[in-house]
Length: 266
View (cartoon, rainbow, N blue to C red):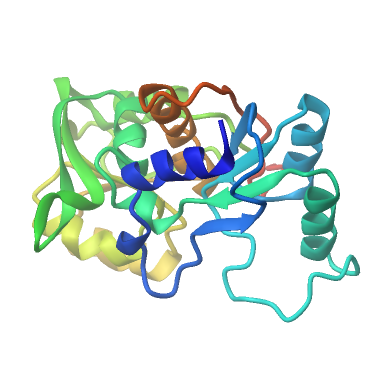
């Protein structure tokens, strides 16, 4: 398989044209003609992931988050990002990113999050595209049977990878939960949309104090705030499976290295 083969399959599932205008998706480093035998999937393009790729002998790293989201004028090895990209190039390791185009795909990041926390049946976008009701940000789904918020919160904590952040919950622990909205990554902008959807709980990440407080003061629904990295990590296995389904004969590995920025809680 060549890098071009892998990219074609990934971009069929995650069309770059669906990425936000401010985003930086696609091939970051690597020759499309180079051979690819091992692909490592990770959320973040950081040093520990590059080290894992080197140790495992990966030819390609596929990450969710971009390395150069805001652009750069230098890749000199005098900065962490410069050192990382230099290491990858020197060792013939390609880097590819699927970010907001993977967020809105069907299935995408929020589908994987929804399944990880126990939502069943058909999932629909929380904020669908006007031209495609099956693509868009977030997902809404239902539990197989209703349960109290306290029980669902424990199920979320168990279904997501452990982090120092853990999860935070706002709402009556006895509130009955059936219909749930989820959005992988930062979800502040989706609060009003979640309320309008009439769900019992909105699960996302990076919720700030004032928007969350005002949201709860005006009637909810309940909120579950998880670590950003943890809400996006379940997608990696889905992305890896797309290569096999597309006939790409490579060995894949999902990085279990926790790259959440927060490393300890007290």
